[in-house]
Length: 97
Length: 173
Image (cartoon, rainbow over all chains, first blue to last red; front, side, top):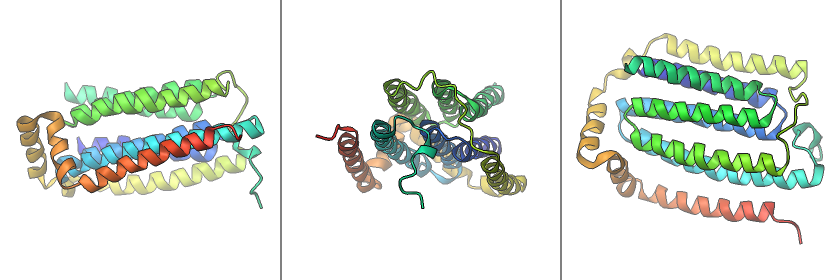
């Protein structure tokens, strides 16, 4: 089961990376970050069968950090949307060189 | 039976991930994401991580995804069908980077996992803890003894995130 789970986690992680690079909608980019975190969680749980319960505890912490990140990130998206009226990241070019 | 269930969950998880990336509508992407999270919870159950499966459904699919849903509806993005895939250059870069990472992962996994599955005692120890303390107790015991400092710091992190999100999303007075 370990090998198959790692393959699934790898596929999900790679798809998250692809979405992060290819999409321009800030909310979908956030969803892709969540996909990557989820893939790593899957790897942690798969390895916990061979390393110990610590793997599952780290997943717990990753979920807490993901919740905090989603709350702050979505607040940033809302405050940017108030200013630009869009969530397309190409429009946010104030800091662009 | 376990194998069949695993492949069903794996197919739904990967298919949902594809749907998140290719979905035109943010709402559709979000619902695909919920499918991915739910089937990941199913894989957690097959890997004997029952507590995490419940937390995955309640916290991830239940709370975080609803937060995303609120924001999509608040910003009125649900009927946005305009093209938001990047230019061809970004597509090439994206597929190159993704292919590189995927190739590295495939090369590592291609060697097999026989060397990693040696420590079978760890899985048995987890099974014993699950029988003795239950699904929650098996995680709670190490969490509140060995990792209690990290646990408390996670609480502080969540408090800081709460206050930060309020300050950021509040209308400037």
